[in-house]
Image (cartoon, rainbow, N blue to C red; front, side):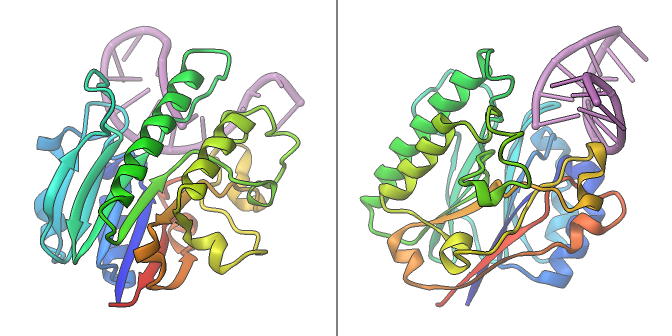
Length: 257
DNA sequence: ATGGTAGGAAGCCTA
């Protein structure tokens, strides 16, 4: 069994104790991190390695930043999303570990939609779809996990009407997310829990966690070879309720060996 | 209630 999780930690520096604690409790084989907000040389690599994990990182100053932690060796590490070598934003990191190709994805938020941020998001999603399609050609188990900043359907949002024009809910974002699924990827949580209302993110503002008002925007997308091995998928609410919590909580799945 | 909170940076930006 291989347990693969994804967690937007909103600063690895602030969240290191929470991450170390969760690694010990949940014991994932692979943990994909987003919004590390850390230069590679400042990433707390030794502290993570002391927990029994190998580490690869793709960071930048202040914003974004992704990482992959794995109990197994990390091979064939690939930094950045193909399709625009000029893009300076650290949002994509890929590696092979435990016989599975995994990617840590921090998809652009895209707000406000009337600015250039929304077209950037959509173009980034087009690049992701192209690369995801190329990966399917290898016919290997692939898990593309991360903060997609996309609410796939109204069931994934506490107030779809209020959020209808937000970049996370807009039809252009949802259409591109569906393109990934139509291309052959399986979204693990919704596939195993077709009707369940569940969230992975609750805004710090307005006490959304306390009110139970969240969004489901962190996803694990599986190639057919990975989906055939899918056993369980769930969202761990524990870390969101803890002190000094990230605004996201981990989503995880298990694959049969 | 068009605010509210959190993080990193540097005297605002991003989410």
